[in-house]
Length: 381
Image (tube, rainbow, N blue to C red):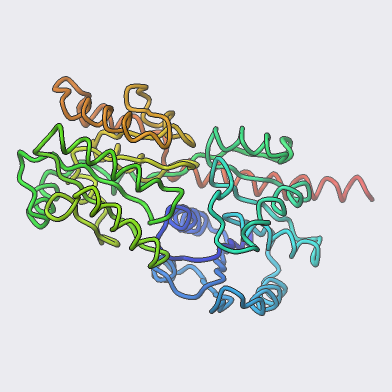
């Protein structure tokens, strides 16, 4: 099959990592894959190219640059893919607009959150959920990456008969326990072995609930003097990043108690360095950071959004979103529980979420779309 995968950006992120895993898996199976991004460059652009996968950009330079849509339409016209598969809300809308121009091209939408973004930054972003919902009736299929996302999609009015639920794929060969990396990373960060390192991994965006994590961290530190904290995630807006630092300072969360890092080259090492990973999001789909931490044998405490509760499979480690008191309480329970599940038991929770299964199930959606198209043409003739 000739498959084009469309996404806004190939910068570091969970959706981008899943698209990269999907592209490489399809490529290994002999499919002709083209990855199209609106914005040029990005970590995964280099990674995909290194694996021999074609990557093209529409060279969207500024937020208001709409000329890239014409470039995208021309690139797709020349490519003539058997399937155009979209990731995230903006690409979903753009993909469906392209289908109006080229109705013979099957388009598969990809929904990766249990609810639309509640913090839109532009007027266009405010209407995207409405457009996505209205255009979804014309999609050939809609892939959602979580059970909770499937439920919310139906509530939003996304047509149930077009929805296919496909879990994310986790590289459990990469993400695995490693005592050597744990010791090296903690030493690099100045974390003693008898200190408790609680980590947060996610971009600095309001939907990730970082202020909730910070308030919970303050409460944990008050009860557990050996606790230390690290936040790893890139900043999308300088003003919001500054706001988070102000909140941390007001809570007296400063170095060496709290460490900030925009990124880290070895996330396996990071997850092994943690004694506990916290997800305090207000919305999620299938949270990669939680599954990757569990694959490394690291316990997690999560807000009950997306499929977080389903992944951790322990109600004691699930709290309502936006509640720092309950989040802190759950963290302290894990820290103080000497009978907690060992790393092998935690890792077993995510071994079923493998990349090969994700690729095969997604590819099956594409095959089904093409089969139904072909059958419709036979009936018509």
